[in-house]
View 1 (cartoon, rainbow, N blue to C red):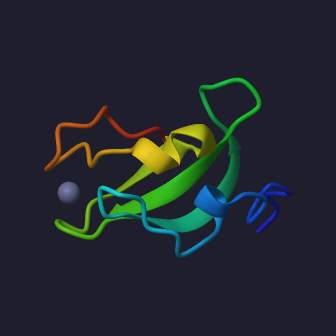
View 2 (cartoon, protein in one colour):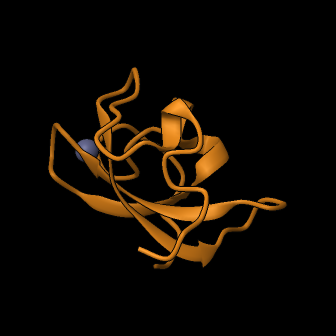
Length: 75
Ligand SMILES: [Zn+2]
């Protein structure tokens, strides 16, 4: 767990679940596609799909499979 930002804010705390039922599983430590952001591994609590997302997107992220969200980031 090399990501220095893990747990830095509420929405990047492992175990956080956003309003769409998306769970923060792991901080990958990889750079995301948004400025200064890291990729986090999220899991959908409805269909169990796992995908990568920018830390800044977690609070509003929708599942790419069952909620019509954007495709997940590589991780
Ligand atoms: Zn889903």
